Length: 292
Image (cartoon, rainbow, N blue to C red; front, top):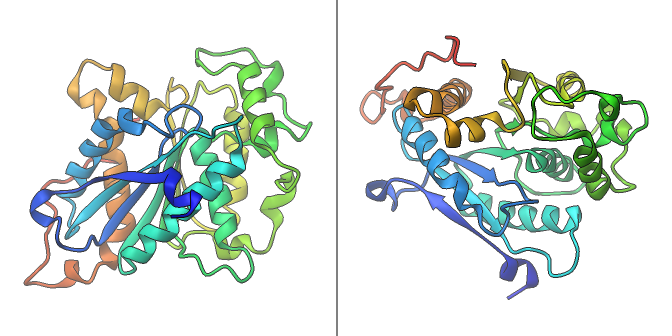
């Protein structure tokens, strides 16, 4: 067994009565690699709620895969997690080649997804490309470390992420190969997911201008759906799910994301077009209402 295999695994979320059937949709979720890479279970309830909503949106057999990567024995390396997640990605996409895959992650793992997409687009790389991507509060490390940003001098508007922490995370993750000019690279036309990218963030995030700049630059290559939560903080979907008392407030982001994923993908599903086998939507998700 290779070192990559030894340090990589994951958790499946799917219905037991459909478990023998191959999934038609897989949400490939990467937890915050700085905090929960080896123990991602804090995300399970949130992703189970999202999965339950996806079951009612016309998909035949949706599934969620939550990655799990052992911590690095010495120090911390962005490259270590990049290689580990790519290994898992290749394994799972090879296992279910007919499924539509959506890459999703929060915080620095949302940033990692951008690096994964760029790796997939590398010349001569046969790795499968996701149909869509969901980036929740990505940290634009390229913008923060390029000397042209102002986030280090801004006052915190209520977020728990501070300027000093943001700077530290960026310096830990940024390598010499990851330049600010990466988004002008022609190969990003091949890296961009066909179904588009969902970019979710809060209006109180200290690096809000850099996140909006990231959305603008990604939008040069394909469709980007920006979701800005009023008074939201870093990783607001998970924070709200864990802290809100009212059930509908807890699950707001799950409803929104399930609806967007369905609009993005379900019409591409062969089974959904069949009058005999289609699982039609059981409820209408009001994703255009003021959930955010």
